[in-house]
Structure formats: C-alpha cells, structure tokens
Length: 338
Image (cartoon, rainbow, N blue to C red):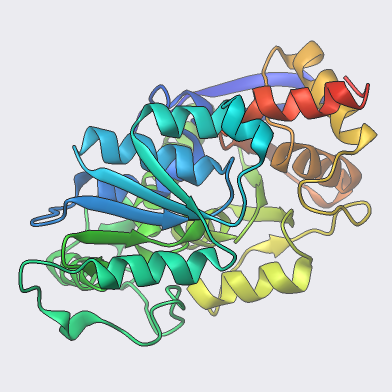
C-alpha cells in the first residue's frame, strides 16, 4: 500500500500527517490496513463475507469494497437502520449498498452474524473448525513470532502457517466471518506494512518521531506499536474509556507498549459536541486536510491537551473514514454546529 506524509502547521505546531486516507480510492484508512491480509489471502471455496457493526461503520464500507474486488457476496448485520437512512441512503451505508451489501437488523448483531455463518454451511463442509468461543475472535493466546524477517518484509513459512490457521478459524463453509472493526490478529499484516512506511519516512527525514492515532478497539495502535519498536505509539480511547481500551489492546498483545492518553473530558461515542465541529473546521481551514467527525476530533483534542508529553516530532495517522463525513456533517448542520 502506497503511503504519503504531509507536513502541516496546526495550532502553532508542526505535525506530520500519514495520509492513509489516500491509500486506494474507497479502500483506505485503518480498515484497509486491517483487511490487507484478507485482500491477498487464498479464499478457496469462500463465496461470501459476513460481518456486523453499526449502519455507518467504516469497516462495513471497507468490507463491501473488499468483497466486491474479490467477487464475493457481502452480508452484514446491524442493530438498527433508521427510517431516514433507509429512505435516503448516504455515506458508508450508501457506498456499501452500491457495492452489493445485503444488510439485516438484529438486536444482537454479533450473534445473528455468527448464526448466519454457521446455518449457511453448505456443500458438505467440514464443521470441525466451529469454535464455541468464536465470538471472542481476539485471542490472547495468539502471538505471531516477533522475527526481524516479519517486521522487515514478508512473513516466514512458520508465520504463514499461523496466519493460515487463523484464517481457517474464520471460515465456515462458504462464509468468511470478519469480526466487528476487523478486530482480529490477522490485521497485523497491514500494520507491519504501515510500520515499514513510517520507518522509510524516518530514514528519509532523519528525524525522531512519536506516533499518535485515535482508537476504537485499539487494533491499529496495538499492532503498529508491536511492529515499530523504535517509536513511542500514543492513542486515545474513542469508543469506551481507557480501561476498556487497555483490555482490548491486551487481548491482542499482553505486553503492548501503547501509551493511552485520556481525552480532556468524557465523550459519549457518536454524540455531537461543539468542540468536535470546531476542531474539524479549524483543521480543514489551517491544513487543507479533511478529517472525519467521530474519531479524529477526540484524537486531536487529546493530542493538543497532552503536547508536553511528546519529546519528538509527531506523526498523526489519518485513518480515513471520510465516506461517513457527509452524514456526520448533516447531523451537525441540523444542530447548527457547522
């Protein structure tokens, strides 16, 4: 995946922006990183992708692009689809529908997705891989060997075998079940690539860097930190609190080096805040770069309130998600915040 860095001035400080929003058209950001392994993996016998999450999820949009490119069906489960969204599709929801998504509403979207994957086994498939703990797809016992070969290039034979085993745990007959937010050890491949790109930028600039990115499940931060030991990786919780985020990261890497910074105050996920609209507008006006309105405002507000902790130049990772900006801005406009 090609990477680009922009040096910008914001809030009287220089920041290096890793433009993962520009990776590959609609397939970009941290979800494209998480899906990198799936994009190139052998999916013999798989006919459809099954996933779950919110009705405007970035992961949903990226999975729809991935499924379309691999010529697979895409079935998705969510808790609720509003009448307004059904009548006037927009943002990630509209993109996923355009790419052929079949979407269903269920009170327990994770359970519905698992039941669909299992009940739609066909062709005399071997059921031996049906794991009763399959809902806990981030297993603390999983650990890829930390070889220099993996950090510097393609996985070795032993690592490829581990990846293939993890992939087989997500395949149910003709169905590939991808967990919400692509929260799976297989996502590490994409962040090994991201770490290599940052390492190349370090060599190009000759500078020392700290890296910052906002987090939902912490998958991106955990795997980036594990593959970029020469940099401190900082993050902020967006979906839950610091304790929740720490637990999610520990499930993927029990000895993670990620440094979790608390936001300046408590924010409820998906709610509208005047300071979110303000920092979004300031960022665009001062840098010319558009960010999204859920994760990035928490990220930037946390970063700006903790600048004294950073001793080196700062790389802020733009994790995409711009497909949902149109619907996010409409919500803010209805409240006269933008």
